[in-house]
Image (tube, rainbow, N blue to C red; front, side):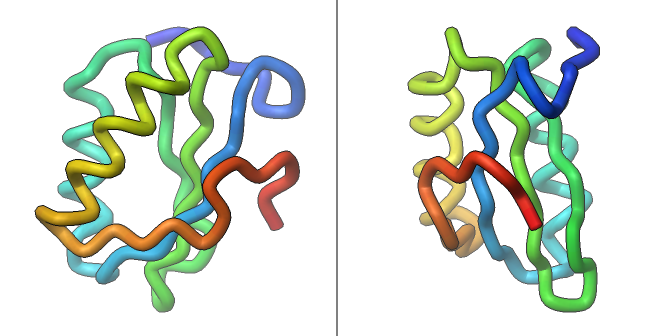
Length: 84
């Protein structure tokens, strides 16, 4: 997987998921090599931030939408340029 410069080379997507699903979510994203990476911002609240490479952001967004149904992923902000 590409090493991202999180400040310049990526689109950030802030989301919330059941904290018990964070490891699964990370594994799914990693299985799509090169789409992006996941950072857990608040594990107790299930707040995560996806760093998505800009050329693939539509593909990644489609994957995340499918995960909404599967594991209850909720987007806090669909495209966020500065995760807290």
